[in-house]
Length: 87
Image (cartoon, rainbow, N blue to C red):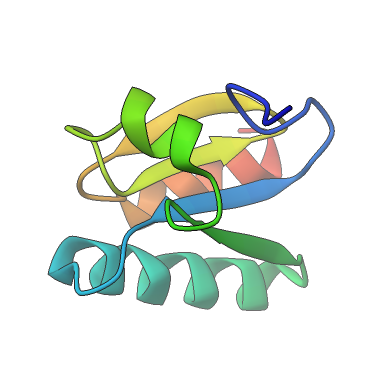
């Protein structure tokens, strides 16, 4: 059974959908910040996770950190950096 959100401790997970310009922008931000901090991340498409797609359909892209939803639509680079360094 598919989880309703990524599991706690799962790190940085970006939920996206194909052909989504906001998702493209969010991906760029997440790639840049995690690379700068030496962290890994994963992208999860709603095609691979339809339950999550249904739950967050109006909020995509959605950023999770350790299973907690932290941002959606537009990922703020400075906020993401603060969240990841614990500041």
